[in-house]
Amino acid sequence: MLFSPSVLFLLPSFSRLLHRAAMSTITGTFQLQQPLNYREGARIEPVDGDHSEETYEPATGRVIGKFFFSGEKEVDLAVQSAKTAFKIWSQKSGMERSSILLEAARIIRERREEIATLETINNGKSIFEARIDIDVSWQCLQYYAGLAGCLAGQHIQLPGGSFAYTRREPLGVCVGIGAWNYPFQIACTKSAPALACGNAMVFKPSPFTPVTAVMLAEIFSEAGVPKGLFNVVQGGAATGQFLCQHPNVAKVSFTGSVPTGIKIMELAAKGIKPVTLELGGKSPLIIFSDCILENAVKGALMANFLTQGEVCCNGTRVFVQREILNSFTKEVVKQTQKIKISDPLLEDTRMGALINRPHLEKVLSFVKQAQEQGAAVLCGGDAYVPDDPKLNNGFYMSPCVLGNCKDDMTCVKEEIFGPVMSILPFDTEEEVLERANNTRFGLAGGVFTRDIQRAHRVVAGLQAGVCYINNYNVSPVELPFGGYKMSGFGRENGEAAIEYYSQLKTVCVEMGNVESVF
Image (cartoon, rainbow, N blue to C red):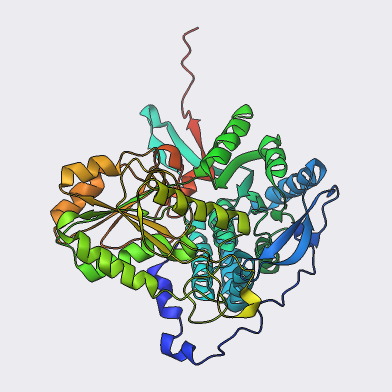
């Protein structure tokens, strides 16, 4: 759920972008006008929405609107609507589903700028990154459209001319619960394989970023899915609980924190519902002394500062072999200090605002605690106020590099989910591998080295679901994504996701007479 190399050719040249306006005229102007729930092919207010929440523009700290949380009645209506649509959709051929998903991908690509702009307004990330997120989104729909017509079972020959075969069948109504760091992209990542397999989906975005998921629902409707096939319910923990416990929900896919993932697993277990959990991480990035230093520095920046550091698979524990510790640290600090923090809708901004003020304060408290435990702040780590007055109340901080870190420090053990990099020296391969795996998480890991044998040896030893060699945070939709240990289970993206949105039926066919033991 990060960068895909194949989208980079779509980006305008950097030099061509720089001449554009020095201040965005959009920032600080957007106001929410329409309902954010979606059911039966239309935006609606929930029938039992008795609790409202404000949603913000992180860049300015401004409230852009209020929306209602969905209660048990609205959740039931959304699930029943999806159940009805499932009966139609599941009877379509894979090629019929494919053509509709391709049309949805085309519409997303056509509306790329509009969706990316709203994503930036509601999430705070730079428009540069948001455009890439939207490109990954339509690519995801294209990819699963290609697989929809290829779903098949096996034929097994049995004695005496009898045979058996397997059918890959949809599950029914699936629930997707999204996170706030990649709102639109996660909605696509969960819905594309679900719909390709013939399922329906009810999707609940994070209450921090409720704006863009409903746009995906409208796009699916425009592309031609049956009414109710992709519904959106807004809400918090209670809404999620109603979804997980609903008797007509067949599967739950969740992206978010470990504590919430545990609760969802408990709720789903009561109904024996399969779950996919994509949870947190505290991933290691290992830099050996024989690396290409420039690439390793770039990789460390990519591993820590995308989306203001609010990325689950970030390589925030940067282990650097002692021989190059000083030179690597000096260059990382130099490049980190160059990152432009500003209005996220400006073309040359590379770091926008964190999601909200409580989260900003939480990240800053981690930096303060790190200092108290003996870490050295080599750069950043403070609240940041951009020059533009309209951004004064935004949720910004300067990207931080911590030195003198030890494995037992809180900043090294706990997921910070902000732009904070911890640098740790190491001496030997055996030592660093043991330290890298000394965590309850297991989402990702990376290694930079010119020794290809060592590279493969190290990633084979890393207890992580996604590993990178001489790069980091590059995640094409063709590749499965998911974690080990407390980082969750199940896979999203790639062919592997099909297994988590379908079920296998075995059919045994007797071609002769029944031989009975009775």
